[in-house]
Length: 238
Image 1 (cartoon, helix red, strand yellow):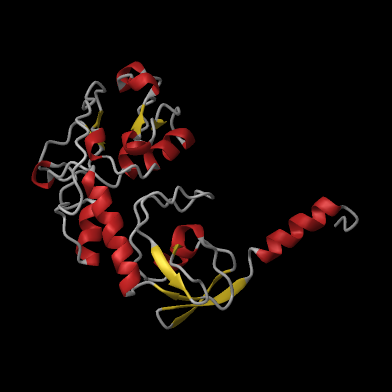
Image 2 (cartoon, helix red, strand yellow):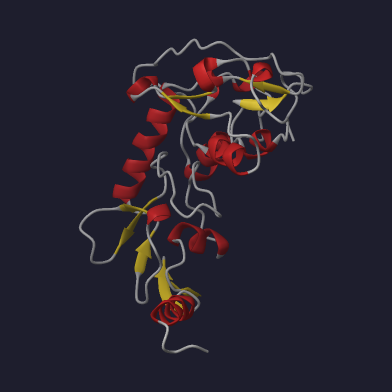
């Protein structure tokens, strides 16, 4: 070991620090988790359900776009998103309080305001993360609180294996991340504000891009925005 090398000592320190365990308390239950572990995944891995759509376990910097994973931490004046917090020794976390439920309800209704609700004819019916969150959090899949934003985007069925329906996209970013990681980076976010969408370059049809048909985007999509073309409407996707 080269103790004279500052870079070596720094790397050893961080390796030691991030493999230490710390004690946190979630809803009154004491847990031993890795210090500086992602708080959302520390909770999920220990059986505490915190709704989320955009969190990816292997992604170091979360998108934090769905705004569903709010929790309250003792000593903090406001609720925080669990996906952006690191576990620290002595943390006391509440995952169900009236304030958190109001925030989640609002975030969920905002997601529904630009999501085409057609569950009965959706390939992800009964296998949809929005439906699962609504069931576990006692939320309604109606979307009447905010005015609907009609996107009316073209459904891309040009690819022989993949259908891409951006009208059902919840902008979780999972397909963008996995396409850049395992695919050929043909998907990315486009435009801004309420017009933000996931798109290919210049909205080219998938079949005209460098898509390598790895199907990873289909696997990670939590809703019916990207699905296998062979799946018929009304039949649950894998």
